[in-house]
Length: 74
Image (tube, rainbow, N blue to C red; front, side, top):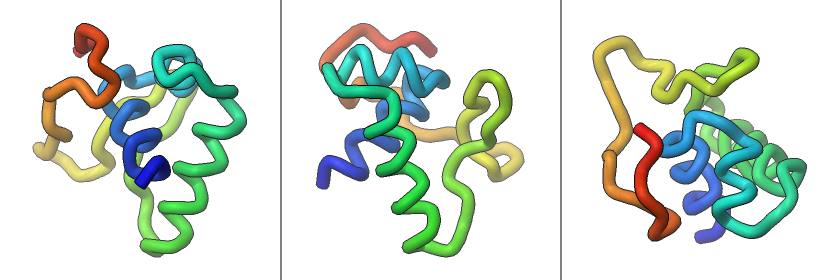
C-alpha cells in the first residue's frame, strides 16, 4: 500500500524530493518503491527527467486529489 502512496505522491508533486519531504521519508525510499512497482508491473508509471513529468501516457493525467493531505503542487 505504501508503494502506491509513494508513487502517487511523486505524480502529485512531480518531484521525488518534494514527495519524500511531504511523506516524511528519504528520497531514496520513494525512488526504490516507485522503481519496484514499475518493475513488478513491467511498465513505466512516471516520465522521469531532472523533474518528474507525470504520466508517461500522452493525454493522460493522474488524479489531482492530494495523497499526502498537503495542498497539491499541480
